[in-house]
Length: 161
Image (cartoon, rainbow, N blue to C red; front, top):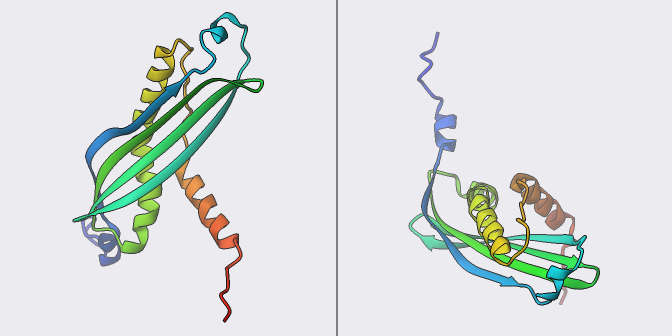
């Protein structure tokens, strides 16, 4: 029987480390263009929520990842409030094959950043005089897979001379 502590070279080659170097707010915005009037109305607003993710290689295995969340709350065609948070982090990724980095940067890193962005949004909305906005967990793995499918389905542009 093999020693349970022995790992095959293949498993060892796929192991890497993700280290969090810094978490910070890169940009923060809150607007309530129709206040104070909206505070005197009975509201049944709608929520439009958008997520974005950008990455920037910093060298020496360091990567900046920025998770952008924009939440727009409307009553009919009027904006009740709009909040945008760009929550950023610097991550050290070592020991991963190069082809795995895009997936890690688009899934694992935003998963780390989401709780911080969620807290910032909840605080801003509350300080703006509105009930808490609680953002549900996000499946970044699914979003990444959908983006890859969208890119593969897009027709390739051919250049002819």
